[in-house]
Length: 238
Image (cartoon, rainbow, N blue to C red; front, side, top):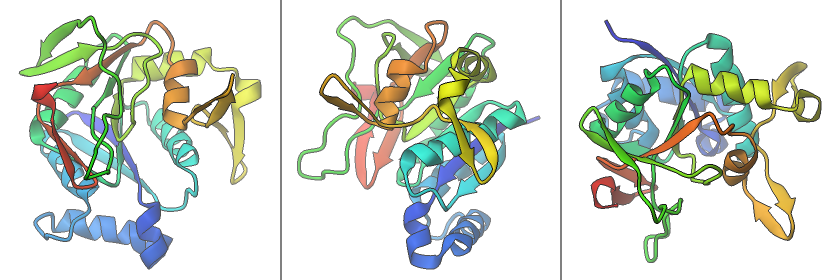
């Protein structure tokens, strides 16, 4: 029996073209016909996850800012009590990446899993994370997992958190300072940009810097292939 997982994505760019309702309906239609060549990259990744798990899907087409989208996604995922996988709309991962992600999220200890990928600059793409000089690796479902130092930031195009990790994040958060009223509902704003000592931290790097407790193990998947905005990265070569 497949185990359940809560999967979220934001399709704000598509909503600009076809409207918010149209964007959500388009994702659903593409998932019903996954072999159509016009599929969004995220649809192909979700379809692979569906082969491995019972996917409960939440699609946000209305968040203007990425930090808002991630905050809404965390809020919806936390309410379910399920492990959470968040995927950006331009991320396409192979089955091996998806399998490793789900296997780690089944572990009882608090885990956060990220997937390295390249920026969309086809002429000179850059990594969206910095690999540690001293490596600590293990094997999960035939995939290499690299443990990251505390506070290490990374792009959050394809990220997973198990329930134990999410519980620790909520418990450690300063609710008075981080409460966001969104449509009349209180949400915990763990994702936001911050200017600190002359440096601009994006919502992803700031999240790792401030809201991932030391008890949460952060690992990167180093097996399989991830394509971001058409730019591929062979994780096995990292």
